[in-house]
Length: 231
Image (cartoon, rainbow, N blue to C red):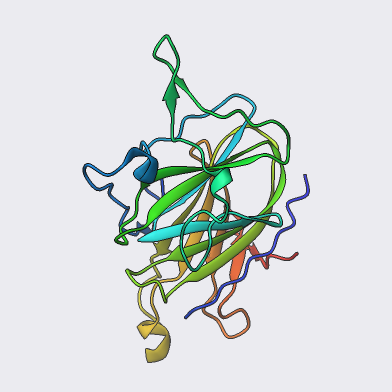
């Protein structure tokens, strides 16, 4: 499988619980009460056979900006770029079972589904439904309650297996303080894990060294080595 990807960052999620050794999750968004269903969604992702769901989580807010060359969320309005792509969070059939509508017709079909209210007032987290394929995904993460501070992340991945994928951000705790005062004053690096059905598949961490400063670099999950993510 070709897992070539790239990831870049500019310094200016679905509440699945995961505890990672040496990692500190950022605060998770909490849905507001009595909000319109179409705005905040159900707070759950309902997997559909033969489909891929992609969500982001872990920071005050996050947005899937683009998949391949298709705009998903507008970075200025923070709302879906195309209202025709918005689908209800869930509906129920005659027997009361959850059913996702409308059905995805082909590999080019993409639906944007409201998930829950963001920690940022007035914003909503969305996830994306699409068919399995190799995809290029662009995401904006907001580690603080400030729309002007955004970490931009992008990667290419083969979403060949149907199921739920998450891009989950967290702060990786640094080892015992060492090095210069400047190094010690730097915040713990932001990392992003790609999870497939709650299993970690890939990990990217922002580099603070001079050579790769400002970049997300893919790390071996064994922590034995790391390789710079490339296009």
